[in-house]
Amino acid sequence: MSESVSTASVSVSTAFARRVAAFAELGKARILALVLVVTAVGFALAAQQQSGASVLALIHALIGTALVAAGANALNQALEATFDARMLRTQDRPVPSGRLTRREALAFGLTCGASGLLYLGLQTNALACLIAGVTLVSYVALYTPLKRISPMCVYVGAVPGALPPLIGWAAGSGTLSFQALSLFVILYFWQLPHFAAIAWQYREDYARGGYPMLAVIDSDGWRTNLHVITHTVGLLGASLLPVWVGLSGVAYGVAAMALGTAFLLCGIYFLTRKNPTTARQTVLASVAYLPLLLGMLLLDRTLL
Image 1 (tube, rainbow, N blue to C red):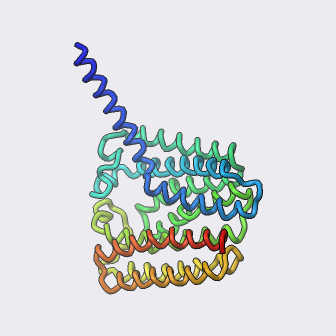
Image 2: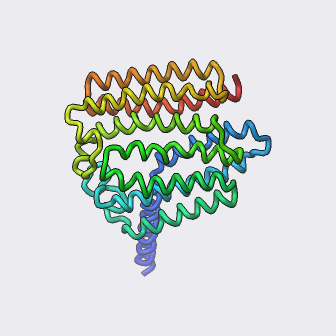
Image 3: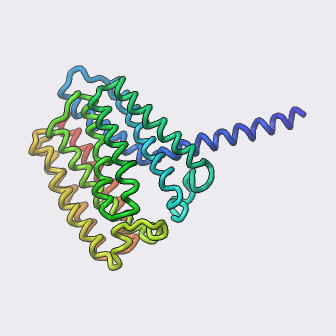
């Protein structure tokens, strides 16, 4: 009898753990980690101008931002569950795989999003809360439905993706400035070649899902490659904005030129090959580029 009770107890614990893991998966941990890093960078750069900013304020900003971002990711998955089920890379997500219902995902997303906004409003300031609210609404109500309509969705989706450093900046200083906006521009341009390469890597999957991404409708790949090249050049210019607005010095400017040139060379290599392997290499180059650039910006600002 006791053995049966023990077995049942283990089964209940395992089922509970799996559901917790499924809800956690809705938050998209890798994307969430990047969001928190750029939020922290924005806070750290702004905090240097505000003697009252503290580590506790940073923690509050990260908690609130994490909740809002997790909510946005969950709502996105709830709304796209039917389409995710058609794609190999997304069919194992919690909702299309049946581990959670669409209603559960919606409830989780709304709860996280609302809690995050409330937390930011109470623990940081109204400006940080407002920017986070714009991030949530633009990602869920604009970008998510637009993905099924037009390849231009990437230009809309890059807006909420570029707002987290402004949340951090607002939480650290209570204001915004041209220096803060330079971070927004960098993040905005970085996403364009990054997601273009991802879309090319998974173009067949996006076609199965019914998403009219540029990589899907661009049969020979030239428009996608042009998209990568032109926006990488735009990113190179954007990466120099911190120098022009007085957020950084010459050392950062030199590093930004070197990193931007290296990233551009990766894009040119992608242009000469146009296959999933070179697309993947471009994605990896973009993933390496951003933390190196932001790290150099912090180093230049704090030490150099």
